[in-house]
Image 1: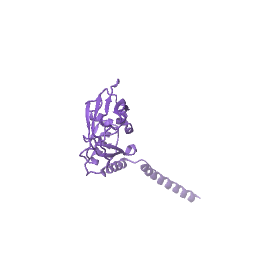
Image 2 (image 1 turned 120 degrees about the horizontal axis):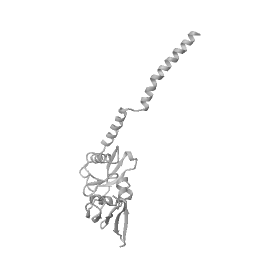
Image 3 (image 1 turned 60 degrees about the vertical axis):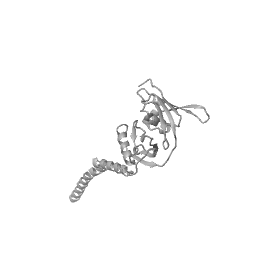
Image 4 (image 1 turned 60 degrees about the horizontal axis):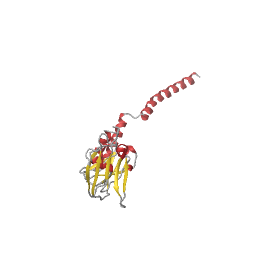
Length: 225
């Protein structure tokens, strides 16, 4: 009987030791350390590095644009005649013409991470869509550089792009109620209200409007800075 007790005591102690040694291994698997985080960062970097770095973007190109962290479908952005992009969630302008998709993607990544994002994985690719629109539009009111703007073949233009090309709104601009006035084919004059603020800061591209030759854009004054 004594032999039996000693046998089971030894077996119990051995099992306990093995269990204590096994638990830290489980905890290490459940709680990845810095090494695992570095692996994730390397994967993100490699993912963007697969983007095309040969073909140069040109004015009038329409690109597919996506930020992986948003989990949204790709959207289309058009490079203006001045070679620039107006990017959602970023109030500035990104130079695109003469750069590759990979170069533009990293420029956008840097811009977004300086404002609204902790980390942004940006994918950019060319979408071969062409538009034709010629003539001029007027951008007036509370913008830095009011006046006429030219619309050239191969360029898609929106209200938000037009305001950005005019230097953006002034300190007292009411970008939530930008007015676009257009003479319709029937001869009647219609005015549309565009919330440029939400397009720029919340990425609500569906609120933006394409402009046509002869359009008049007016940015009113806000009574609150």
